[in-house]
Every structure is written in C-alpha cells, then in structure tokens.
Length: 559
Image 1 (cartoon, one colour):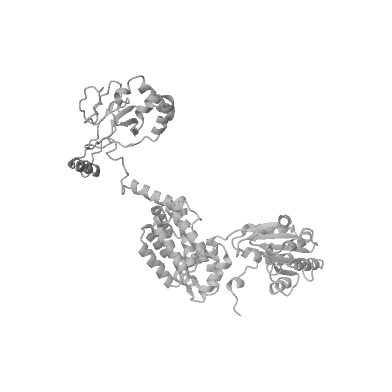
Image 2: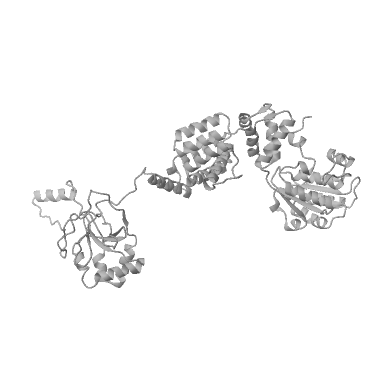
C-alpha cells in the first residue's frame, strides 16, 4: 500500500529532525547524561515535530544500543516500537479519550513494570482536550509516577492546560520551521522519490506550509500526483492559488481605482475555480509583505521572496503608502470574516474590491486616514493646489524686514482719518505707519508672488480675554478676524476709524498684552480693511425695491 510522504519520511533520529535544533540538542544531552525527567510537555504549532520527537524519545530511552543520544533503530526494541509490537510504548489520543475513566485506566496500568524495555512511555497527544476531571485524575500520577514510567504530553494549545499540569512537566517549545529548511527538506525528499522540483516551486511550497514541515510534504505529495516535474505553475494549479503576479496586478488595479479591471480580474479567478476565501487570505498575506517592506529597511527573514520579487514588491509598497496598505488589509480582514458565513463568496469579494477602489464607499477610520494621505501626497507632488483664502476676505500681508518692520506691495492703502500721507511703494519698500504706530496693509495686488498666509486660530481666545480684561476694546474688535503672515499678525477690519481708536487710551498696549497672555508671544501688528462685496446686478432685493418705487410705494431701504 502506498504510504504518504510525511509518514514515509518521518525522522527516526533526533539528528533528522529539521528546524528544532534547540529541543533535540537538549533531549540528546539528557539521554547521554541519564538525567531524564518523569514528564515532558511538547508544545507548538502543528507539523513541527512534537509527536515525532516523542516517538524518538520513547525509542531512545529503551534502545539497547543508543548512539550519541539517538536510538540505533536496529535492535529488536527499536524495530518493535516502530511496528507497534512492543506494548511498553502507548500512544493515547486525548481528543477521543478525554474522559476521566480513560485516565483512571491509565493510572491503573502504570503500576505494571515494562515487558521488554526499560521504561513504560505514555504519549498523550492533544492533551489540552482532556476534561477537567481527567486532568484532576492525572495530577497525582503525573507528579509522582513509578520510576519506570515516563509521560510525554503533546499539545498545540498550551494555554488551555491547567497550571497544575504545567508545573509538573519539563516544557519544550517547538517553533515554526524556517521556509529555507522546509524547502531543503522538500527538495531532498523529492530527489529520493525520483521527482524534480524547481527551487521556486520548493520555496512556494515552503511558504504555503507556514512553518509546518508535515504540511509541506503533504503538498509535495499532492503535486506529485499531477506531474513528476514540479514547477511554479504546477504548485499554483494544484493548490488553487491566485499567484503573486495576479495579486500584484489586483493591488495595482485598486491603487489606480480601476474598479472595472479589478472586477474583471476577480471574475477570471472565479471562473478558474479559485476559492474566494483563499484568494482573500492570500491577498492579506501579500499586503502584509508590502506593509513590512514599507516599514523596514532590512527585512531579513520577515519576507520570504526572491530578490526580483522583493524589488518589485518594495516599489509597489512605496507607491501605495503605509496608510493605503493598512486600509486595504483592514477591509480584507473584515471580508475574510464575512466570507466564512456569507451566502455568496463571489459577491462578498466583489463588494470588498469596490470598497477598495472607491474610498468614499468606506467610512472607517482607516479609510479616512487613507484619503487624507492621498490628498497630502497629491498636494506634495503638485497635483492638487492647496486651498487659499479667497481675495474677498482680505488682502495680502506684507513681508517683514529683518528688524521686524512690515513691508508690502503698497497700493490702495486703507483710508483712515488718522492716516498720514501714504506714498505707494514697491513690494519690498517699508510701509507707512499710522500715528498710533500700526501699519496699514494695502489691498492685494496681482503682481508678484504673494507670501503664504493663514488664519490666526487663537483670535477668538484673544477676544474672550479682552471681554474680561477690557470690555470697551472688545466692543471695538468684536466681529473682526485675524491672519498670520510671516510672523506678522494682521487684523481685518471693516471700520477704518478703528486705526484711530487703537492709539487712544493705551488700547494698542491692551491688545498686545491680551495676545501675549493667550499665546505667550509678541507679534508685530498690522491692519487690513475687508473688501466690500458688490451686490450682483440681479439682486432680488434691489429688483423688489425698484419695482416698489415704480408703483409709487415708498420704501425705506434701511428697514
């Protein structure tokens, strides 16, 4: 009868175990020195060698001729344990024998001495499946078993074991096996079986195994049933994968917000019998690699890929940006949860693609961050010009001299009662000041490059401070706005007489003190007059007044 590759090529010595050098070295040292524990706990993810090491340890403690801590696999005891004819080694599946009665029977058996070997070894697989009563029944025997008994517990979910069990065992953690080691083992097994596997195909199988060598050998067995020569196309076809090139193309469609192309690609994959849940999971893994490449300069072993694949993925990651990648991952993670219970997997996947192609369809926090980052990048690259304050609100703020004196492109200065004779000056010339020492800012000019200005966000706090400290001054400034332009504070006013009022009664000093109290800074101040908005010729109110006068009706416009 044909035997599966993972069973046929199961390691028979500690030296053959791949990827668990720390565990195997410790066990061999205990065997060589004779410092054996009465209870071992092997924990780790599936397919990493827990049960295999348990069986090797069971042979090694009973082997008649051990070799450097490894069983010889030649003596009668080793051969008997391999073929199951020696009853001194018992393997128990806790998933199906998890009741208290099964553990009581085991507790009664441990009193009997070994028949052929030195120790009676009990391997309890998936020990976390035992019931609470079974664990309680095992406690005393596990803590103080007879001298001829060794317990080996194996589990993938160590967090489910009671602390009383953990404290009675010597624990060994089996880590995920590195993809390079899995690929090397797959290549070796394939060569021994008369198969040819390309390096790329072996690495792809290793990535799909996700740290479990048994899964890698099972996938190799599946591919071997299709062809003797196994390449990337064979692995992709057998496992139903979309392929990295397809995932990169799908990601580019989303980045370009090309929904028709993305939907067409999903349709092609669906018609090729690709499972939508697996496609979504593969896409999340691909985006995870982009996330790492965008965040880490030297990825090392964080991303398993060829140098050419790494270069293409890094370029795509930099093009997308971290916020976009995280947004896509979050959407796909939610889609993956819904795919497990959805009515139509194809519809769920298409909905996810549409949400990714049009961020306006998604109002999550990640989507909003993605849209903000996209806008920032567009502004940075000059694709979208940043919005500026419209000319109707106020004019330009003049640049400052090194000494702090404002300058301006002086044309049409604000006419005020206290203003001295103002002479138009070029853009870099000093601006004339009013007798109260505050410069008057002219209306905007269309000539030259205008300095950047922004709203003074704390002007409302300054007015609130004046409301308490100087109500008369607050009354004069109520309704005004303020801007910041190259370190100068510009107050936009409607009444030109405010310039005259600010010089009386120390009003200017009161205002400067209020600004200093609120912001902790002292700003050079200037005034600007708000431009009057001309009513349109087709103003409905003006037409109504004109029609009323034509009919002989007296109309008071002020009312």
